[in-house]
Length: 204
Image (cartoon, rainbow, N blue to C red):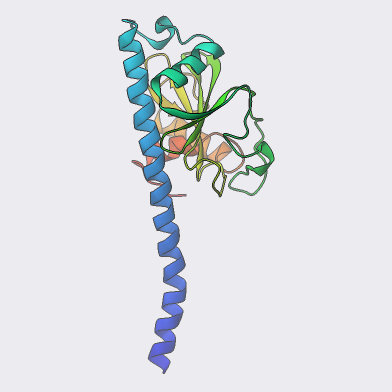
């Protein structure tokens, strides 16, 4: 009976951890799929325009960002100049610390793509950054937490993708770690860079 009791306690401690690890891997797999799709679409866009970078190719306005998504992704729903119903309402989204992001959602057109992910491409030029690609990897399904199923990916004119707060790419590992420490638990930034640093593992 003592042995069975010990086994029960160990199982009670181990099973939730295994389930959490499995969920983290599922999130990362879904994120990686959208990342690859975005990277391939950007490369195709630049090649189609015979351009040396994405800005030269014409990715230089909010309208151009929307045209890129609608032309280079298979979209199944479009929400003109709106978050909903492609995403959940902004009030439904939280950060890892349970609060609200300190950075507000930018008003722009949103989409649901064929994989079921919800995406929106903000034109937010800064340095070499073209804009920010916001993805909710499982659409309106929960948990709707930045750093778990919602991520902010920066798109740079050289075609690289990195953490949303960067202004040139690639960011150094130290820059990503600093963003993770300062912003991942309380804002839209820092979590994606941490996943890149940890070789596509969600270690937090």
